[in-house]
Image 1 (cartoon, rainbow, N blue to C red):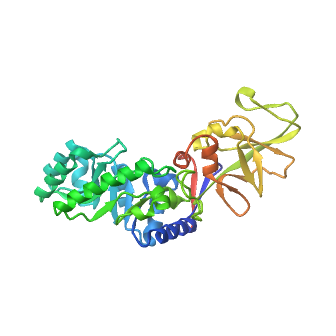
Image 2 (tube, helix red, strand yellow; image 1 turned 60 degrees about the vertical axis):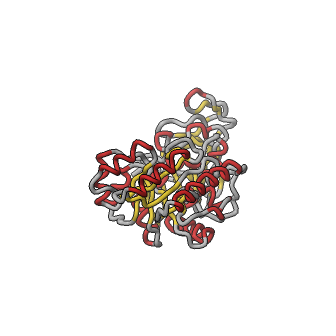
Length: 364
């Protein structure tokens, strides 16, 4: 198939997992595989991590959980979205934990028969999903008084854990510890307590509880440029696009939409069959580049929906060559974090944008 390819290097996934395990001193991780494992392929990634002993996975939608179950992932799966009534019986039957993150959702679990297990999400300062801090004790009391309810975990989500200034994260941690103290005073037996994520693995590892949610670090990218970046992680995805046409153009020739780019000299323009519909960031044409056989070449003009152009100068390039858009191979390295910083985006946005037309090739 001619088109973009994402080579998924599972040995790099295992490398990153082992580094994270060492950092956490044996605390188990919950591998976050939502959004198709951040664009890497949820089922193959989950199976690979399971082979290394990962027993906990997290997704956002119930459909993502069912996809994993259909593929034979019998380990624990937590669904982050709010539950609906139609999820309850299947969740109970298939070892899927749901998310109690709104006061009005408690009745779903009380009325369900059988009632699925759930994790209680507390809003400690993200102001997104989560039981309001001032309502948590009431919810905990109801959980304690109703043996029908299966509260398997308590968790929250940091708003600023991947930033250099951590005072707000520390405030959230204090809020969370107050919730845990309230649960302890009620003698609630909670199996899983988790708050840490990729950011806190790097800059607040001492705050981990008995389970740690990890997404971005597993895939070999740092969550921001404000966290310590000394962990030698490796990018799991190598995103490439094929050269499908070459043409010689003279100095001054305009290339791509708007004619905003002009050839500075006589040169060879290559057409790469990858575009913004495939996840190539459209704004990367300004100062953007690709890698080929150990050298970087500038992008020529605006990114198109299905293609983009490159100024190859006088390079020895051929139709059929595959250029590196981001990732790492034997001759080239382009960090997705560098692209994200250049275009005022994030690695999360770029990785999850890799579209359905991209062929994913898993390398063991």
